[in-house]
Amino acid sequence: MIKYLTHPLTIAILLAFNGGVVDTAGFLGLHGLFVAHVTGNFVTMGAAIIGGGQGFIGKLAALPEFVLVVALARLAGTGMRRLDWPAMRILFVTNILLLILFTGLAIWYGPFADGDTPIALLTSAAGVAAMAMQTAVQRVHLADMPPSTMMTGSTVQATLDAVDLLTRAHPEQQAATSARLRRLSSTIAAFACGCAISAVLFSYVGFWCLLLSVVVAICATDLQSSRHLEASR
Figure: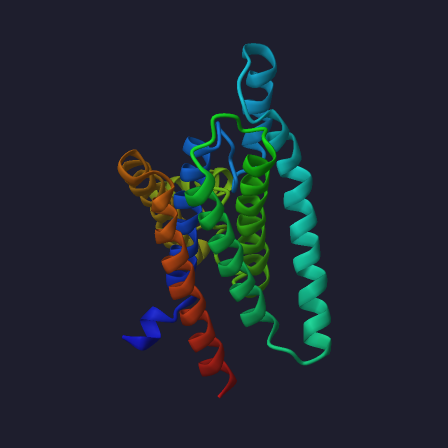
């Protein structure tokens, strides 16, 4: 049972679920801002230019901020490993702290009548930073698992794998294809569940739904730490 809980796929599923929760809450409460799927902000930003709307500045800033946080996470992880510090745990905990900051700001100051006010932009920045950190940490420490925040590529690959299995194409690769399809399907389903649950909770309790993301992030961090300890024995 413990081995199953600390399996990389279990942790990836938790992170994908969190990606759905946070992205949906951000979209609903921050005037259409995607805090995890930042390229979607180009679409909503273009719509805001033509049709009007709030949160233009936050959407414009989301991509460079996402890139900056990923770069800083990479540099910090490399530096900590050179110093023999527990880089993985520190970065996972940093992700939790950023989620707590995002949740606290959103609950305390939201809902936001104007998405371009300083406090709304700060809240948006905290959410983007949290999801950028999650994405960076997963890419380093769960590199064999599907992404937890960007489902387009995963959906394309899952479709290709399903077609290959159904048509029995590349029979020598069927075992690997089937295993990959299970991983992809699991994370896509987890992300979708996170989106649905977040939307329902947001309709009743607003930004308080983000507390769920903090709890899930803590669970994922604890499981990843346990897995790391098991591997080091």
